[in-house]
Image 1 (cartoon, rainbow, N blue to C red):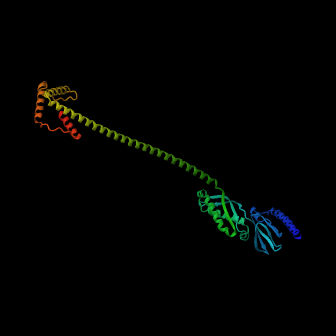
Image 2: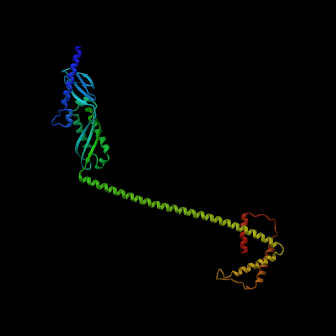
Image 3: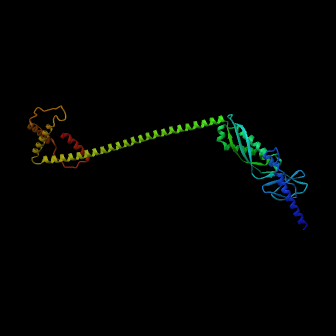
Length: 360
């Protein structure tokens, strides 16, 4: 029963002191920055029974030396000997990096600010490695930002903004490892350039856009000419192929027509020879020669002004007699009939051509 009463008294004292601790934390230090006020808040007093909030690490010293780090929850301390020396927040901390001036590689003065995201990984190093962690990281971010901007030209600063952020984070982490602090992200909020530089940049952008428009227009004109040339080329190719096919078809038609004419002429000559071999064939031949003579004589002076006339133009009977004499002489010189054989198409064509020439 006595132990229970003592425990209740300790809990009441701890609760009262805890309220006193929170009231003391709300009192800011005059003349200090927001980061310094956060780290300079009042520390909890040793009440034997200590309740550590979640995501906080309380660094305890025993007789002035580091002893241990209290975990969240219930903890017990020895009065007078133990003392909570530092309270570190394990949450992600957001720090606003003040605006500062930096000079780029091409000697352009820039006004740039940013936001820093960090977290305490080792409360022991954060307590004993540096006096004011937030202030130290802020100053390191500013110096690193100026150093990295001095390596880039103005155009690359805007194009490689993501790479610039990652480089700043890498440089901060290399220096803050001894402080137990890890930089998670760094974001550049705003980059301000001088008014004249801004005007020149706008003029450059306008010139670049005009150039791009001119290039696009020229490419469109080139594509149009290429398309027209390709169309003309295809049209010429199709026209030549059509002409070629037409000539081939015409030649094939003329060849077939010549074969047909040759076959018809061959049949006509064969029929004529059969008719001449019959009775009264000579009389029929005389009649045919006379008709052809009269027909040929009637066509004189119709196609040309130059005319060659025989001496006995009016003697038709003499001309017929002369033609029949020539036919009789050729008939006597012809060899006797052999067995009739069917000639090939090439031979028929050759014979038809010879017959046509001799008939003319």
